Image (tube, rainbow, N blue to C red; front, side, top):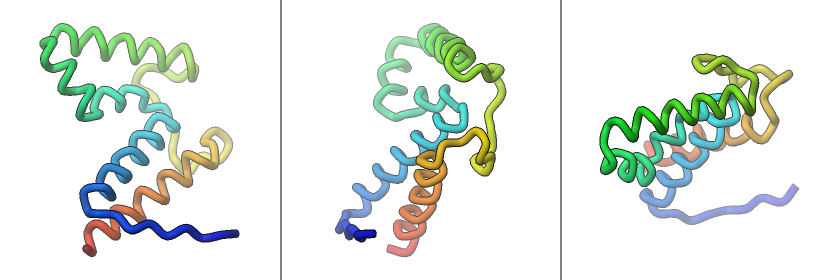
Length: 104
C-alpha cells in the first residue's frame, strides 16, 4: 500500500473533515445532514423557514425511498452488515483529521 501525505492549512483540514462527516452521515442514513452543509443552509435560510421545512420533508421522503429506512431511523457506523466499508473509512479519516486539527 502506498501512503500519501498532504500538507494542509487548518482551514483546508476543517473543510475536509466536514466533507468526510457529511459522507459518513449520508452513508448511515442521515440524508437530512446535507441540509446542514453551510452553503446549502445559507441558500435555504435566505428562502425562509417554509422553504427549509419543505426541503427537509423532501429529503426525508428521499431517504425512505432510497434506503428503506424510516424517516427518523439510521444505522450504526459499526453495523458491518449494512454500512459500506468506505463509509466507515470516511468516519475513521474524519476522526483522524479532527485530531490533527485539535493538535495544530
